[in-house]
Each structure stands twice: as C-alpha cells, then as structure tokens.
Image 1 (tube, rainbow, N blue to C red):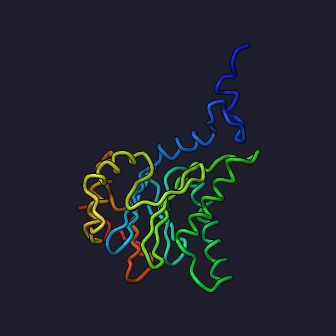
Image 2: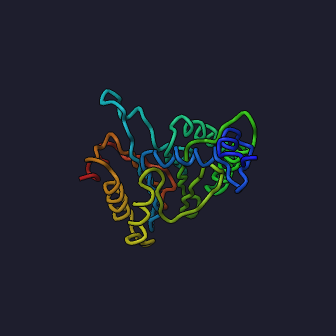
Image 3: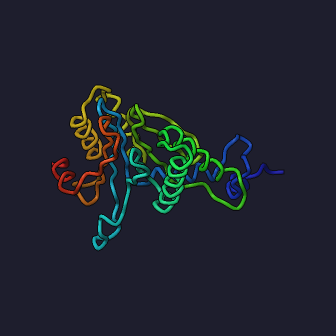
Length: 235
C-alpha cells in the first residue's frame, strides 16, 4: 500500500494531513502573500494604516478600489489578499460594531471586534461546504489606548506595534525591526511607512494607488488622507 499523497488531504477543508496540516488554510495564506502590501504602525500619538493598490488596467478609477475601510468611527482596517473576501469581512465587522452600540450604548473595543472577526474566520476552517477566507486584515483603532491587530486565514489573531501583510511583509518587517521606535510621532511614523512601501514597490508610487488612514489618540477618530495629502507624503 502506498501512503496517501498530499492531494488526498488538500480538497477537504475539514481533513488534517498526517503531519497535522490543513492544506486549504495554507493555500489561503498564499493568496495573502501574493496580495499588495498593507502596513500598520502604532506611533506615540496615532495609529497608521497605509496600503498599496494594484490596478490591473489604466482604465480603472483608483478611487473605486478600496484597500482601507472604515469599520466604526474609531476603527479602520486594511486588507491584503482577495478584495471580495475583505469586503465580506468588513461588512460583518461593521454590523458587529453597530450591534454593540445599540446593545450597550458604547463603542466596541478594538480587541473585542478583532476577536469577533478572528472567530468568524476560524469557523470557515472547520465546516464542510465552505472555504477559508483568502485575506488578512490589519485592524487599527483607538479605544483609550492605540491598538493594532492582524488576522490570519486560520482565524489566528496577533497584536503588533508595527507590521505588514501581503507580498512585502518580510521586507517591511525587517526594516521596522531596525528603524521602528514606539516614540515616533505621527509625521515620522508616516515617513517610515512610506519608506517601507517604496522599498517593496516595483515602481514609482502614485497617490491614486495608495490609501492612508490615521487614527489620532487625541481625537479617537479615523481620518482618511486626501489624494493631495498622499501626494505630498510620497514626494
């Protein structure tokens, strides 16, 4: 008898291989690794999200393709991977945030919302008839403290000071390990994020293919930078 090949285990989401792997989850991670880079950073006075957009045609209007989404007034999320999967998670996240406001008359915490997203993603790794989400999210917000979480297609959740998802993750994290400082102000943090994105970009960055969102500690509100501000930042 020959031992079962990998193909015997990679078609069913609920079946572990003999060495304890879920191949469909690993394939979903590959979808994230090939996605455009998104970056998150916690600074001294704000949380930053910066994301690159890949446009398959010059005819596509850059503003019609979102990579950073507002979840609640104090929370935003950046994605890498399958954009349609990201929209589905964003819609679910917005619903959870609003349900919490209606039920408890207060804004949901960044950690609680991130855990709800992680739980939802995890459910799609253990039931038949579904597939894992081929997307990772960086969830940033301010709820008294500044928080930054990353989701994984397995449903795992990690909190970071600074990180990236997508094709440039490794190179960006190597740069951050050398140059990131928790005492960086907002302006210096933005400069470091742009430096990191330029490092992993194939060509010159244009303002219509870069989304930037900032959540300041002082206001606790998500602010999306205009194309003019993004253009000035990229110079």
